[in-house]
Image 1 (cartoon, rainbow, N blue to C red):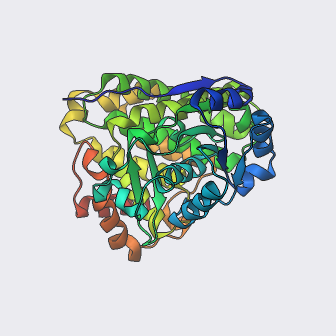
Image 2 (tube, rainbow, N blue to C red):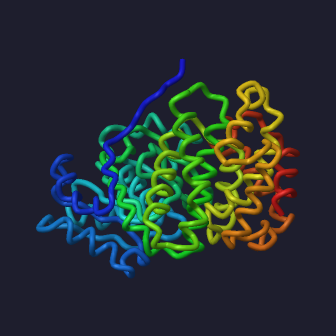
Length: 378
């Protein structure tokens, strides 16, 4: 049986941050902890959120690392409990939103965070007791504001997924105005993350036609606007469409992701300095080529349909088009450029084989397959 479930309340417009206090009232949050990072504070977006809260008392945790960690979750939980908070507001990119989801678990559930990881059988252990969360994205990439999962590096250095409908934000405030000042390289990397979500979930074999339609539309929007948004950060139309594509990718990936994310999750755990969206951009061409041999991809003409959304002549053009786009966006040409060496391959493959996205790829990858993908992405 296919489970098709949509999703949460989304406020989507320029200036939507003004609705933050109203959403807290609707959900019943009276003492929020705002989870963010130093960069969001520095550019003034945190203050916009605090101003929108008005008289509502709020504590602030602004130490989210670029890849959220179990240690950061613990530090935020301490503030949550000290402030007697009753809910969370995440203001930032996917890292801040995922960190807040970790807090939603750890502040309300007993035991170590790993006990609730998906690959440890932890999803059913996450209950409705999880702290309510409002998500305010400031990048257009992860779509975590409308997703039921979080990715966190735990104390043993594994990059693990945590998935439960109880982690779904009670509200998403998608305000493209908050992305207007996003630097070009971060715009490019997060935008390619959104494209990877749309492409991978569309290639997944699971039966979910609504997700397929959302993903394909999101791919078309992101592919048409990512270069414009990167080269002119003040392009409001491009920013709006890229934020929509990010949201759509996450609305769709309840269907499942695949080898791109298996590899990027694993490599991100091996070297947390590497940006998740950049890694997805580098792995996409190799995984698309691998997935071309999947029966479901061929039967449903999935590569042909993606090529049309990208305005390409042939499905075989997709990989090269992605490489060309990466180059135009100023992203690295390959893994070697970001410091990855073949000596890391076995460790990366170990993590990819164990990742929760491994089994939802349309074609099950072997260790040899993963090694070939890594070599192709170098």
